[in-house]
Image 1 (cartoon, one colour):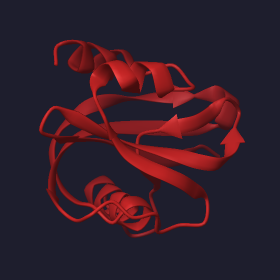
Image 2 (cartoon, one colour; image 1 turned 90 degrees about the vertical axis):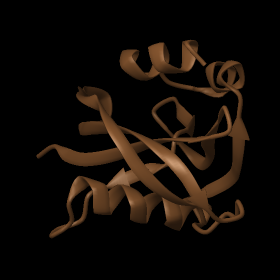
Image 3 (cartoon, helix red, strand yellow; image 1 turned 30 degrees about the vertical axis):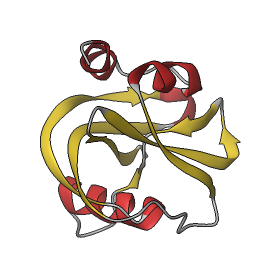
Length: 126
């Protein structure tokens, strides 16, 4: 069974929120915040919860970039553009070792997996 996962591209003043995972999943280590949708949650509820749980940041969802299936990890990914609202960066989960705001060029350098094409295009225009 495929796992439904939400991914937040959180923007704040031209920078984007990135997290570093303690353990790599496949080649995924630096990534945008996000996680599994829990039973009874909508995509939006799950994403706002995951962003806050991983980074201490409160965000609002702007629009959905799209979705794709990533077969190696057996997940269905839902990508959302989000705006930063409030909160100081703080690691709030054991599986996260670092959180930081990155300019688009730094996102491209840090990303350890392929970036979803619509997200890559959006970042390239920034």
